[in-house]
Every structure is written in structure tokens, then in C-alpha cells.
Amino acid sequence: MNFNDRKVLVTGGSRGIGKAVSLAFARAGARVAIIYRENREAAESTLSLLPGSGHLAIAADVADAAAVEACVKEALDGLGGIDILVNNAGIGIYHRIAEVSYRDWQEAWRRTLDANLLGPANLCFCVARHMIPNGGGRIVNVTSRGAFRGEPLKPAYGASKAALNSLSQSLAVALAPHDIFVGAVAPGFVNTELTADRLNSPEGEEIRAQSPFQRVAEPEEVAHAVLFLASEGAEFSTGTIIDVNGASYLRT
Ligand code: NAP
Image 1 (cartoon, protein in one colour):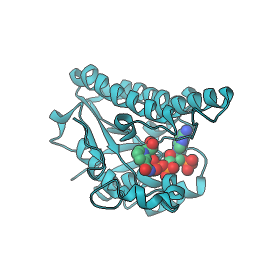
Image 2 (cartoon, rainbow, N blue to C red):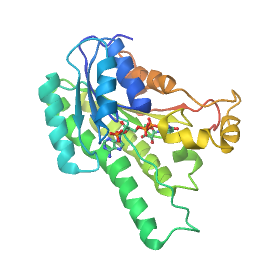
Image 3 (cartoon, rainbow, N blue to C red):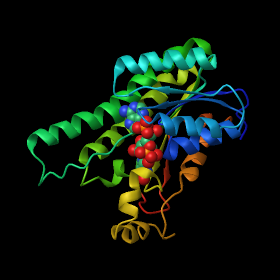
Image 4 (cartoon, rainbow, N blue to C red):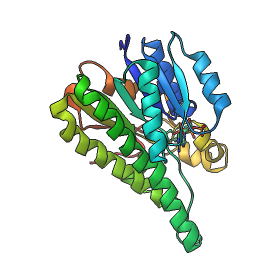
């Protein structure tokens, strides 16, 4: 896939899936703006690995609406535009309903929805309002298998990702007249720092056995689906949700 001279904004682009997405776009010729929250060292390390020039890393909390507006402006200035937005940053907080306090329950819901749903919604707004008068673009949202299968240990996470799927489909219709194509990628377990503790625990074997391949996805496999949705020729796939879960959960 060729992304020569494309300008790409990747939230959470410093680590895990976002790092693989940033690397894949840069290898395909794009210029990338990485948004990260606080781990500057990881962001600078990823930035140093990107082939080509003109990439940048911007610290911003996507859960903060003002920070979203400011980081989109900084990316627009730094890249000279944005052709592709990848909403990848996300968090998962355990809040077992039978165990947590009411206060912790509310806190988990608030923090999860702020980062995983309101953040991407605000990024879509700010970036789409740039794309509309500038010939269109692509938006790819990273959701989760948990949107379909449920997330009993972190229900706010599953709900946030189901809502992000719905947002992707709503915007695919709303933005089609503006030549903006919107899709989602829904990974199952992926080998990243987010899942390292569980994958390295005794539970790891059970998690790997969820797929007939007896393994979880590598971040590069998720990046491949993201780049497909952003590529030339994928326009008519707008509104789709691509599963990257190794047949561990087959939805109808
Ligand atoms: P990760 O390894 O934990 O990396 C998270 C990235 O997002 C980091 O760059 C982090 O920046 C950034 N980030 C987190 N919260 C942020 C915020 N509020 N504002 C800005 N940046 C923020 O995560 P991952 O495993 O690659 O997951 C990436 C996405 O895939 C998430 O949306 C996740 O829900 C989804 N997903 C993951 C899996 C999986 O098994 N790993 C499965 C399904 C879906 P800092 O390092 O600076 O904090």
C-alpha cells in the first residue's frame, strides 16, 4: 500500500498497536503525527524509528476536549494538513460489579468513556472539520472484540468500544457526502503492554486457546487492517468493522 505524502494523525501512536500503525504508515511513505499521553520517552523512541522525515510527537490527553483541539491544530501546522486520522488511544480499567465500590464504579465509567469514546468523537469533529473543506480523508477507529462479546471484568470498556463502532458507522454515513470514509478495526487480544500481565499469567494459555491458531494477534496484524481501510480503493468499505481476532469470536 502506498501512502506517499499522506499526512496521518495516530492517537496512542507511541506504543503497542499505535506504534505498529505509525511505523507501517511511515514505511509506506506517509508523514505521521503521534499523539501520546505522558510517556515521552516511548514517544521519542518510536519517532526515532520512523523512516522518512517530517514526523512529530505531540503530548495530549485525548480525554481533555481542549487538549484535543490544540493537538489537532499542532498536527495540522506540523504536517501541513491531515489526510488520515487513526483513533487508537484507549484504556481499560477493571471494575468488577460484584466487588468495586459505587464510587470506583462511577470513576471507571467516567474515565473509560472520556478516553475511549468522547476523545475519539472530539478528534473526529476537529479533524473532519479540517477535511471537509480540503477534499476529504479517512478515519479509522480502533475498537475491540469486547464490543460484541462483552467485557465482564471491565463493562465500561466493552460499552465504550461498542459505542465507538456505532460512532464509526454514523459518521460513515454523515461524512460520505464530504468524501470522508470511516471504518473500524476490532482486535481480539493483541500482544502489547496493555495485555502483557494477563498473557504472562497462568490465564495466558486460556487466552491463546481462544483462537484456533493458539495465539494472540501481533500489533502489526492490526496495523495491516488499519492501513487497508485508509488505502486507495477501500472507499466502498466505508462503515465496515474489520475483526482481527484469529476467529476467536465469530459474530453474525
Ligand atoms: P497500549 O500498549 O497500552 O498503548 C496505549 C497508547 O495510547 C500509548 O501510546 C498511550 O500513551 C496512549 N494513550 C492512552 N491513553 C491516552 C490518552 N488519554 N490520551 C492520549 N494518549 C493515550 O495499548 P494497546 O494495547 O496498543 O491498545 C491500543 C488500542 O487498541 C486501544 O484503544 C485498545 O483498547 C485497543 N485494543 C487493544 C487490544 C489488546 O489486546 N492490546 C485488544 C483490543 C483492542 P502513553 O504511553 O503516553 O500513556
